Length: 478
Image: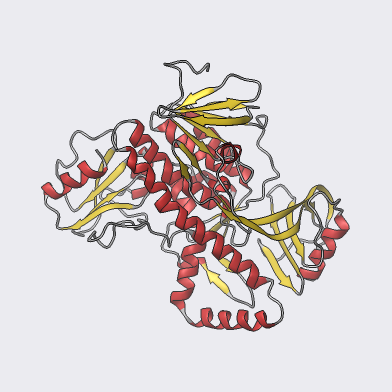
């Protein structure tokens, strides 16, 4: 594409990780021309760090018709062990997905890439972004060794070292909290008793999870081993940390890959700068505790995609795009804090051990506190701000409701449209079939719900009149 009028992509997404792939696929499925730029060659890596999908991310993937594909290759875990014997039971989650799904990130990328290709995304691999400039009419993206591209909006989903964020001059405040974390993909002579094996003892922490191809990913850290990321790493060091934390090294051998990294806690103050947006690790990074990174990025994409499409199709005011910041930034901040709290408690020493023991006792006795933690870690507990005087459900996540005729809400959301759930039959929503689906409760409930494409309540009312519904549709659907 040469950037001339008539060939300008309306949106450019930078980065082909899970966040960028889901967002690009959503835009293309909604009829928005989208180009995805990726500086790497076209090869999905098996060296990813993310290994779990939580319930809310699975619900978002269900709304795109791909969750069942991932469920078929992943392995469900219904209990999460934190520290001091504290266990969270995911079997009680009010979701179709009352578990955490263990699978490598590359499996998620495969499914989302296939969906994006089928939707018509214009992929440009080996396309390194060197700069972005914006004006009142759009954004120019400068690409190394190629002609510049123009778009109405650009989304940086290009990771912690985001070229989009740096080119825009946006700060990324925070700090490194864990240095010299070791990673290795190994074969094991002894199979662990549980699917996810993790423990912290003294100064050491280790985590084991299977790839599914015979290899296991090992993540380890030792408080006394604080060295730069480029320091050489050998298997003996990985085995020693694992033995200290888990009591044995399970006969690790034949490492196919090893590396070090440091874990930061950072968040950009604003996810939007004019026509530029940031999502996923480009906007927020945190410790791996709780496995929330990939999941949070997927939900960023789910929030932003339908809003960009609505604005570009003329169904919503550009002001709608400001709600991406007001809705997602607080969630990102919460994830940074909660993941940091988990890792600090897991690695507690001295007086902090008594604090951890006290927290464990309280959580063990109080079910509401455990539910709140589960809601944060799995993502199902977050809700978005609602206007003063709005119905109590406005802004809430909607579970997978049973609909009349045997359908489900998340099946109805697969068209990328709003879904109006009403108590009975009627002609509501006429003339909006391209952006609204109408469904009915399977039971006799009298609440009318207008569900956004990302599965949150845009508007709700009890015993609503037709005029009330029409006003709500005009305000939210266009």
